[in-house]
Image (cartoon, rainbow, N blue to C red; front, side, top):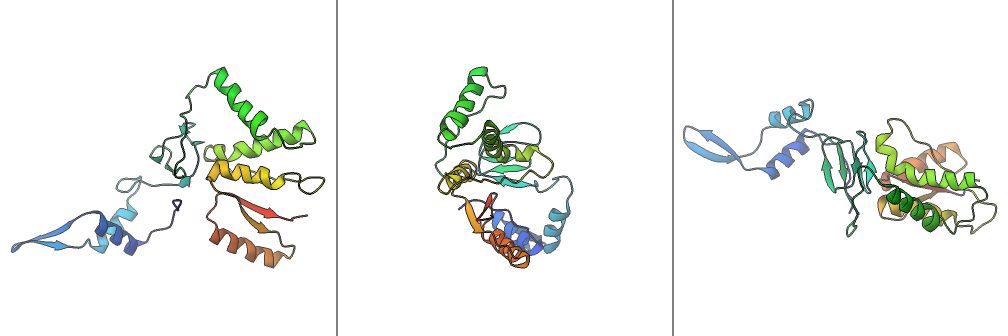
Length: 212
């Protein structure tokens, strides 16, 4: 499955160290197999500035623009960004130019507007522009040091393609369908719904249906 970030405590770090190296204790009687001491794990977790253990801030499932404005398109850990790119199995990503040409920009616009969004019945050009913004936001999120907006998708009648629009976005960003939950009007029940939803679905995208 997809990589997930989880907090690690001292005992878990001892387990990681045990499985990552061969530990030996030297005494006057010779060398013997041993286990890492708890104080070693404590020191590694407390070390500042990535001195002993590189820190990580997020795991992403699609290429994105990192905090340093670099394009993250190579799978694995990126120390300058403190981000791990975990591409879906079998995914192939064409490298993105550091300085895209006019032709590359035009092709990107064509794929978004004339291919992906071509068949959705947007009411105005502003609606189409908001859909483009919704599509691009997850790829720019690591660059933005602030909360990013939520997006509401509405239509004048059923079966207009709202679910397909949002589902396509999820496939772009995570390689899997959008995680959906029903919106509940009662505040306390909705709070429980959100906590349960986030616990069962590690994200990074969430959809709530039947809001209106």
